[in-house]
Length: 81
Image (cartoon, rainbow, N blue to C red; front, side):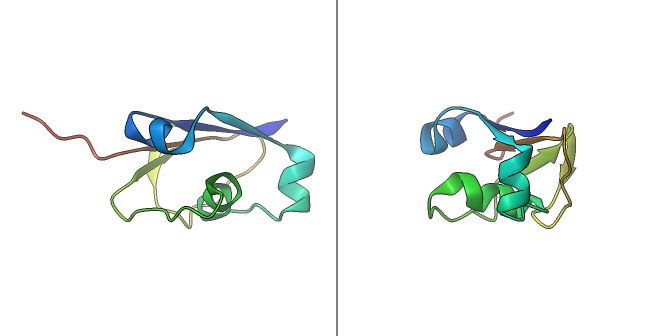
């Protein structure tokens, strides 16, 4: 299995295409939480404090644990009226 990473709206512009982090890579890189997922994908880019994060469609913070098979999504805050 793997961890599935999705980027939405302007996050896709910043980060590019969605990613799949293979289980072997997860283990080799000690990817244990959302922050680790971001750092693996970000190529040095900082995670902004206003970015929304969801794991398996539930809002979480960057310290939330991730496990094999999880879907991690990053997207900008939604505004409008």
